[in-house]
Image (cartoon, rainbow, N blue to C red; front, side, top):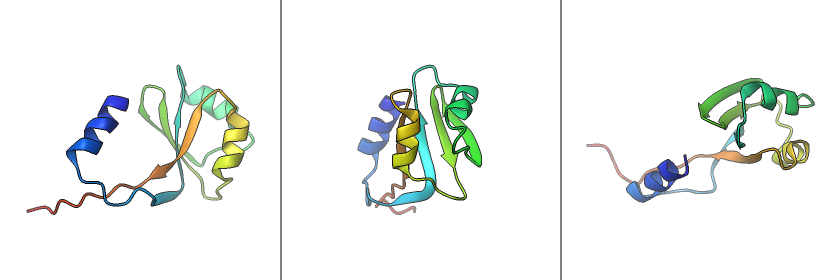
Amino acid sequence: MKFFLILLFFSTSVFSLERKALTEYIVTGPHMTAETLKSTLKKYPPDQLRPLSRGNFLIQYKKDPGVAALKKIGGKNFKIQPNFVYKSLNKPD
């Protein structure tokens, strides 16, 4: 996953790094499964949970608990970050 993100960064011109999709988070953890993520986040259960790749998930909320609350619950079990939106400066032909 890291290699893919680095390749994506170098192959496109990144326009905006500060925009993010509200109420969406990327969760990453070693050996993370959907079941372990659901049980860890039982205080703030996500409305949608979608696997991205091994150990990486996209979670979505209708009512956002905030990244600080999710990090507090997760502790060192996983890493969480907002789902940042990247735009390319390249225009399609």
